[in-house]
Length: 126
Image: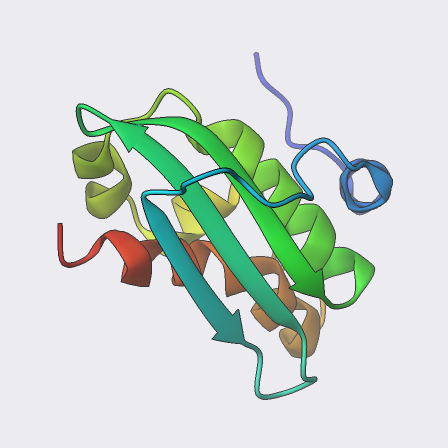
């Protein structure tokens, strides 16, 4: 049985991803580039995707923000590689985030959902 991670376990994962540089870089010739801003705190994330035959083959992000927005962006990049644009379009933003952010303050929830909201907007016209 899959147990939901505790808030502490989630924070450890988010911090690990926020500090990682694996998905924090510029892609060469991205198919999609979309920037978004969290108006509550000023975090700004640019999401970049390379899509081949409607499948995400590479994903990265750039920008500035708190641990939550950077960690969630990194987690999102990891999760969407291999997914089709149609799958992404059909998922709710909360599913794309990959974790339940309801245990965090409302402002942290906006940070957690920033990259997923940018992704939904980027692929909405495809």
